[in-house]
Length: 116
Image (cartoon, rainbow, N blue to C red; front, top):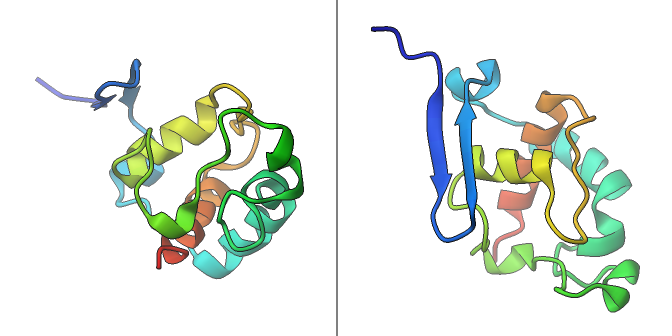
């Protein structure tokens, strides 16, 4: 039997994804330099320039945006879960499924580099 999807379950979050992205199936590597450009344009307003969850829009958000410098993310334990979360969005975080998947993988690579 051919398995065409990888089932990823984010335990405790209510998210379950059948995911067969060609990027993730091929190892899904992102470019953090390219990811910084996408992040600065789309994510920094809420998550802040340094990814500490302190962007200008964060003051009015509840829950507060994730602090990427801490490394532990509530809804994503690995890159595949993070990609699925970014595509779906939750609460104040919008869905970014309109962006090319490679751009999202680049953002993930950049966000992972912010961990102190």
